[in-house]
Image: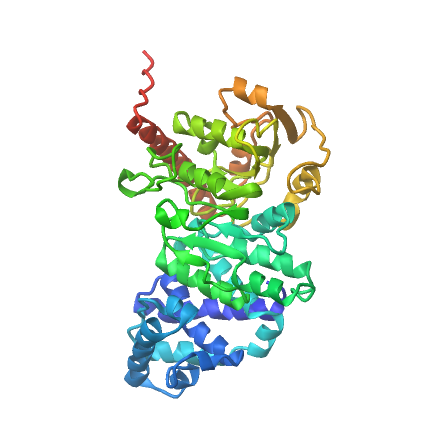
Length: 486
C-alpha cells in the first residue's frame, strides 16, 4: 500500500468483520462478501455503473432498509451472476451471501459508503484491494496464507526477471493475482503507464498479456476483482485445473511467475494432462506444476517458481524431473528462502530461476545457489519479511534476468556458491545443497509470539507430512520402501 489513507481504509474495512462475528461468518467469507459490495461501490466511484443492469447498483442498496435490503441484495447477486457481462458475471458467478441479519448488511453498506473514497482513488483502488487481501493472508485464522505469496518476495522475483511489454506472462496457480499485478506494475512503471507504447501495444498489455488459472472458485473471484481494479483484462485468467486439460489450453508464455500449491492431489489422483510424461504417475502436485512450467515456456522463455524443499531432493519422479529440467532448461539459480514466511504452509521453500533452452539437451552448465535461510532471523508476526531482506541476493544475482552477467562465488563462508552440472550429477541430481550452519534452531529459540511458536511446531509436522506424501507417491510408482534399521 502506498500511503496512510489507504492503510486507514484497509484497517477500517478489516475492522468491519467484527460486525459479522455473530452472523457466523469466516474471514474468507467476509473478504468474499466485501468483494461483492466493494465491486458495486467502486463502479459507482469510477463512473462505470452503466455496465450494471438498472436497479442493481450501489445506490439501490443504500436506499433500502431491513428485510427489503437483504432480499434485494440476494436478488442482485443472482442477477449479476446470471445476466452480467464478462468479468461482472465471472465475479458474481454462483454468488451467495453469508449474511443473515439485515442490520449487519445495512451496517456494512453504510460504513463502506462513508469511507474516504477520494483518497482511495488518488492512491489507487487496486492498492486498497491488495491491502485487504494482504490483511486477510496475514490473519492466520483465515487460512488465506496458503495462496498468498509475500509481496516482498513477489517484487524481488519481478525485479530480477524483468517483464517486458509484448510478452505473454503466465501464472498457472494464480491465487489472488499477486504475480500478475506486480508484473503489470513493473511494465507500467517502465513505459510511463503504457503511454510510451502504441495503441495496439497498449491493448495487448491490458487485454492479452496476462494468462493464468486458479482452481478455487472463491479465490478466482478475488483474483478477477484484483485484476479489474488494476486495469488488467481478466479474459485470459480462468477458473480451472492446471494439471488437467485446462492447463494445456493456457498455451505458451515468455515469462512464468508462480507459487504452486504444495502437497498431493486429493484422493491420490494423478495429473490428467495428455502431454505430461515425467510426472504422469505421481500425485505430487509441486512436481507436476514444475513439469507444466517447463512445457509452457517458449524457447528462450524464463521462469521463477516457488517450490518446497522436497522438489530438490525427492527420488523417483523427482530425480527424473530435475534431470529433465536441467537438460531442457538453464537452471541457473536457486534461492533458499528463510523459514516462517509462509504461515499456512509451514514448509521450507526455494525459488527456482530457469530459462527454456532452444535445444533439449545440455541446458544447464552450472547451478548457482544462494542461501538466504541459514543464520537468518525468526520470521513471523514479530518480524515480517521486508524488501531489504532480498537486497544482497539481488546484488549477487546481477542485472541479467538469464544470468549472462558475471557472478562471484563467495566461497564456503559466503551465501552464494556455484556448482557445476557434473557436481550436481555426482550428487544424484540432489539440489538440496547447503553448506552454511543452519540457523533454524536458533531462530526458533528467538520466537516470541505464542502464535509463531505454535506455527513453528506445526511447520515441522507439515514438513514431515509432505515428505511422507512424497514417499507414498513414489511407492505408488513402484519404488521400494527403505529397509528398517536393525
